[in-house]
Image (cartoon, rainbow over all chains, first blue to last red):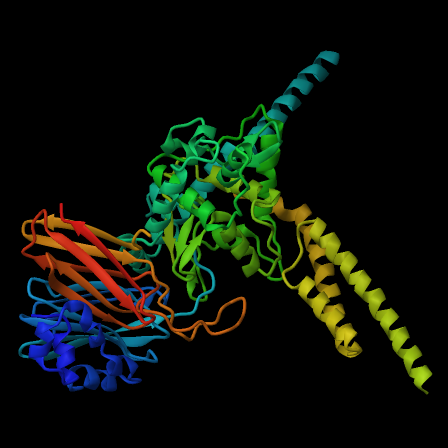
Length: 150
Length: 279
Length: 90
Length: 104
């Protein structure tokens, strides 16, 4: 299994070629169209080839109810779904909703944490692609504008 | 009659002493602690060092997630390198400080009899540099912040124990000046520090919850998510003063150093827990 | 006609300068008491800029706002000197 | 120059938890410089790669919606002390950084 495979396939590059290339040459796998999309459905279509996802309670999305600061919103996604290929974070009301797309390689558990930016209150969607389908769960995170703090 | 007058005089003098004692720093501090403990009976004393995260559980969870790997660790690492790098004359910054590494942070702020002023950690670092013919660091330079972040980190777990020596009249005057600053309203919004951080601690102002003043000085410098960078305690003072629409003072001005002296004394007994992370 | 206008303008300028100096004096007094407000200096600067482009209505209005702020800041400091102790936690 | 990436690892059994933090501005391209008022150009990590003993474990494709000074954690099964963990990234301006560490 090589870096970038799942998203590169969408770009129509042959898998055999990819497997033969040294890893450093594969940076182009960054899915530019998905990251440029201005809607969540557009991003999903570009990234995964479909905007259809199956709601799943086997995905745990841990985000705050009210973000202390929209610039740093802690997020953890874990799932008990098996054979996970990728986990993506979509912030519906961000100008470019796709925040990140993680390719999960063999050996790596589907448990990812990061910190994201949110411009305003929005649903945050965790999208999990497995070998059997595309699943998701969403939660709303409220973003308030402060001024003090610290 | 004369005897009666003498007795009265002694009583009056005793009362005056009593009066002075009541207004002394330790009595101030005990009243301060008692006030916050009665306002927040569910919060253990030691937790006040964590500011608003002692009070707000949703915010606390997010803060703990940042603390999993806080961005101030880069500042601590850089500060460690700077601290252990010899000055051009071969001397070390550590040679200026008569204390073990974990105890250096806690020596400040202190009152210096010779200059009649409060010396903060930042001032002490610059005094040391000047002694070794090095230019002062700007108080909000990354070098200064990194050094103080490192010393704060090394001091973790030691207790705040700021002294206002009774036999140094200037020390009490500096403390009193800081106390007056803290309780005086200023700016177009006409707020005192105490208006927000005593009477209204825990309340919401727009989208923010106000922290309690006890513990305010234990955890600086702080990585602020809002700024994506580190700020010093006095830079935070300046931010608050700007928020009430008053003109901020210069960093390490007499006003801020005295305020830091007073506020640090109010946190006696808590642990030094810097550097910190705040939103 | 031109001369009259210039005299009027000069007279106005003098009045502006007098008010400006008064506002600046009060601002310095507030600053000495450690009580200066955030925007007073900026209002004075804006007033001066308006005056330098002969927009005296704006200049006078700005200088009046600065003077009012400075006066309030001075009063605030005097009032606090008398009352701050009442706020101390006991 | 030293790497601006930090890694912390914790092994329990054959499972290792990897936490990483890196310095990067992650500029959105829509933020104004507070002094000049000019827009700060977009500048962000695009792709971050973790490898265990040269085998790719995790690839993170990122947008500007990842916070400044990014943080990531994940878990990897089949790890043991002595394994070489490598983190590297490339950004939208062609910048790179990497760090290698040995699991303990």
